[in-house]
Image (tube, rainbow, N blue to C red; front, side):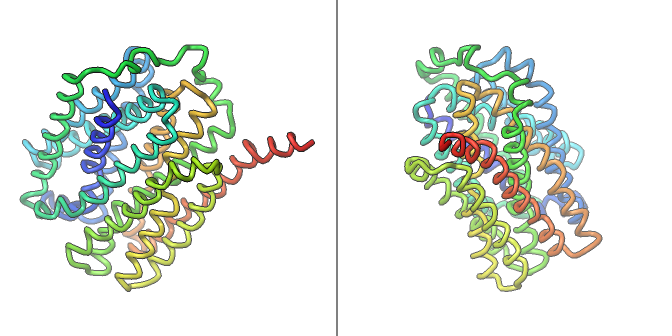
Length: 389
């Protein structure tokens, strides 16, 4: 399987996940649910990812990265098909579980496939992989507009499912890249579970991903809803809110290879980026000006857009040949945060305003910046001091 196919798969994964923020109100309307319940389906999605986590020890032993990726694609296709055939609340709950299971393995399988099979190119391919995710999230807000209604939203999921099916068939019928056979990591090169769990720097870095992933999900899913329900923006502006956020992320990830090529420590960029994102998210919610909100959302996305790909590059440099197990920790961190915090924002909006509940979530970005600083001091600053002695 060539890197190009993996990039396209990641693009489709992104579209399938991120259209929810734009059509959430239509799904809620078709099921007779309120805004506070909008977080339910995202939480159910993460429940599916948690189920995948429980299955991982068995599947990792039996399947290569490419097998994990294809298994995830099959699960996603099943979820999209269920949403299309039976667009009901009960069916949607089961569908989002399947999408969560599939999303877990498509995400972790894609990252580990690139990290393990293209180790010499991972510093270029990993940021590019996550750029395609950002690009998918960027364009899907506009692509889904023709289906933004209580009667048509399920058609958008049907189209994405069909695209995923075509890619799955293509990955099975195409010629396998030689490295998918020859570049499997040797057991002696792979970090053990115990090694990772007892590395404080690695655990804190995972907590950074938890904080960032939660905030990213909140911004991507609830800012469009905030624009629609609080700022009373038109549908095209609702889609633009999501687009601005992902334009920022995509631009940052596109620059990722250039930044790494300059020899800059990824964690330095992460510390500064999360701090700027924290400030810009606060500013975005302090105004009712739609243009200014767009600008701050874009800055929020841009400043911290490299956090996830830089994490993958960093930890695979710390533990070479351990792409599958480090990817599981990466997805676990995202899953834990996305299962709880986006849902809490919608529940909190029942007690206080939607604006204030979103503003309170910005604390996650600040916490991520502080944790990143601690990781940097443990991993790099102390090493620099020892070398100078």
